[in-house]
Length: 61
Image 1: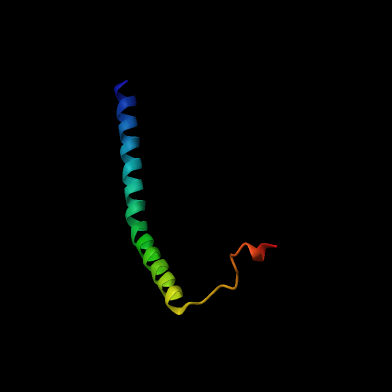
Image 2: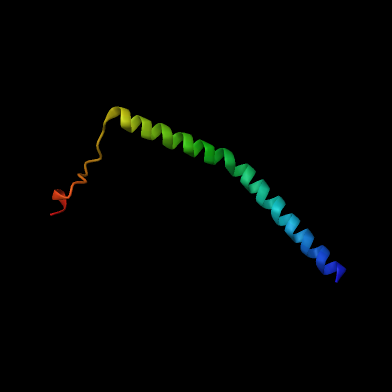
C-alpha cells in the first residue's frame, strides 16, 4: 500500500513539474500575442480602415 501511495505522489509531482515547465515556456508567446493583437487593433482604429462588410440590418435583405 505504501508503494502505491508513493507512486501516486510521484506521478502527481511529475505532472505538476511538466505542466509548470510548459506554461513557463509558453507565457512569453502568450504575452507577445496579446501585445501584437493590441497593436494591430490600435493601428486599425487609428487608420479608420473598414473591412468592407456593412453590419446594418438593411444590408441583410
